[in-house]
Length: 230
Image (cartoon, rainbow, N blue to C red):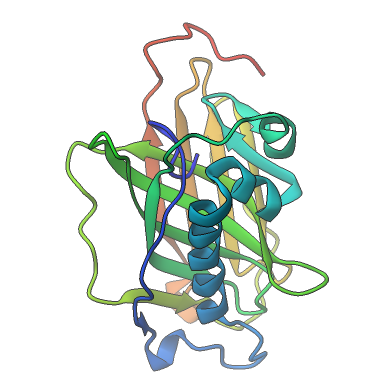
């Protein structure tokens, strides 16, 4: 789960410039707004700092949001009575990928804990009906070395062209995932029998380039449990 892996999340982060090249911008719909997703991620971090880690998760999670602890769980159910820790995890977004139609986005970045542990997170976002964004998947893992911080947050928007039906990512055991409404951005998490998982994010680059796997991360199983409950 996002800034999970060792603990989970919180953070305060100064606004970082958003870098997006011309070819990243939507060519047709104009509805994709990666800057708004970065703003939502930064607001999430501030909320955790101001109101508490798990409070922030509860207030920004979709009803069907999932986390990995390490088994997959419904986030709202898992968070319902979770007490906020005295000090939350800090995190900073490094990159955002967004569908052409703006119906789905994925962020990736780094987290740090007060005890010195660090890692990366991946979060899937979608627009709320009343405005703003809610997260639908959060996962992450620890790292031996800090994730290198970029000079600017990178932003990439999928190509705006007709996309064929979604191809399922090869699954290992349980699988969870979804695609944007226009199918130009897709994500999946496969969980094996010991709670190891593979996280895949694919974006349509258009033309002969087709889909690119912009994230393919493996999280090794924990030392325990020996088996992963469904």
